[in-house]
Length: 157
Image (cartoon, rainbow, N blue to C red):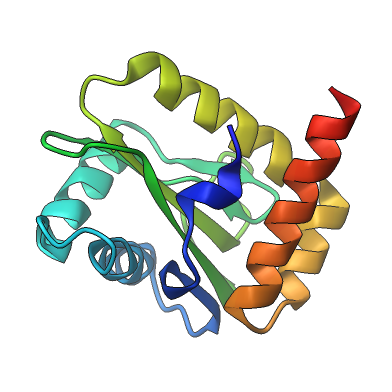
């Protein structure tokens, strides 16, 4: 799976102001809705917040992977939000979150969903990658970093 294929520059927002977990999820929902004409940002937000109610998707070290399943969705889609300052996200390590990668998958794609989440967890556990992502000021730079990470993973596999 090539993570960069899930993204589009229009679904990447860098160095945004963040005031709360709810606002960050609302921003991600709007970004995702821009690539999904059949879904509203409200429907997407409901999916993401529904998953958060089961337990925080904050991985620790400033990273969160909000995700959800959507009935009627044909293929996985993602959005990336980087924040100027971290927000309280109820992360596992109680640290503020400033990198949020949101993922939506079709309701029935359990295996694919888990594989993508595992790959994302691996990608965001790389401290150098996260540091470079935090320094990126535009969508193209973020997408280039993700493409570069994917290429290096495929070469080492």
